[in-house]
Amino acid sequence: MLPVDVVQCQFEAYNAHDLRAFLETYAEHAELYRAPSMQPFASGKAAIAELYATKVFAVENHRADLLGRIECGTKVVDHERVFGLRAHPFDIVAVYHVENGLIERVWLFPAE
Image (tube, rainbow, N blue to C red; front, top):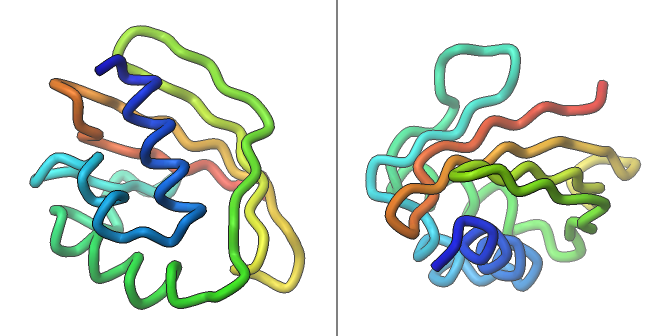
C-alpha cells in the first residue's frame, strides 16, 4: 500500500471515529509530535489509542476536512480543517511518515 493510501485510510477512520481501523494504520512504536516540541505527546500504539479514545473520538460532532494533500516519497502532508474539538474550527498541517505500510511518526503544526 502506498503511503498516501495509508494516510487516506487513517483519515477516513478518524472521521468515522473508528478507533480499531484508525489504529490499524499505525506502527506499534508510532510517535505523535506537536510542533515546536521535540518530544512526542503520544508514543506507542497504546498511548495513541488512549488519547484518541478519551480525548478525540469521545467528542461526538468532531471531524476534519481535507483542504490539501502533498505526497513526497514516504511523507504525506495534509492541510486539514478540524471541527468540534475547539469552540471554532481550526487549521492544522499534519506530516505523516509512512514505512512498510504503517504510520511511524506524525508531526502536527497548528495554524496559530
